[in-house]
Length: 139
Image 1 (cartoon, rainbow, N blue to C red):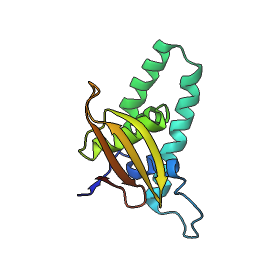
Image 2 (tube, rainbow, N blue to C red):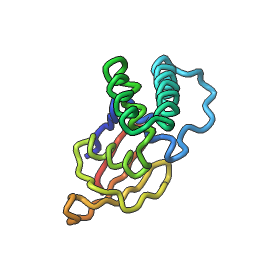
Image 3 (tube, rainbow, N blue to C red):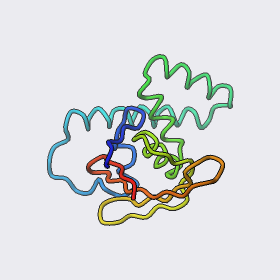
Image 4 (cartoon, rainbow, N blue to C red):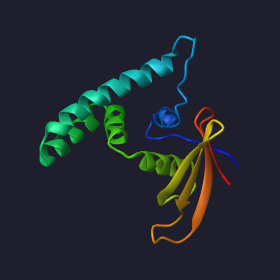
């Protein structure tokens, strides 16, 4: 059973670049894509400020950003996550379990992800993430 992905308000836009799924698209961007671009630009600006800040200043800036613009704060958090953390978050957001991504491979327009199911290290699971459709399915 496939489930839709929603990652911290950005949906599939957060993981599509991992597959290189953005490709050449002759259609003009939609309003949602423009909004996501604006959010990403705000996140990049915040991330640049965070790189040069001390740990305490960094936490304070993120708290302030979360109050003023929660989506930009989410984007900043995503920007600082590794690819494996983003995939685990996508899987968990769809209602499946993935404590740690052990492998990931592109396959025919989707991403095959191998995970440790539980934080104690037990359980091995596999998922297919389709960035275009925004779905996760267990294999």
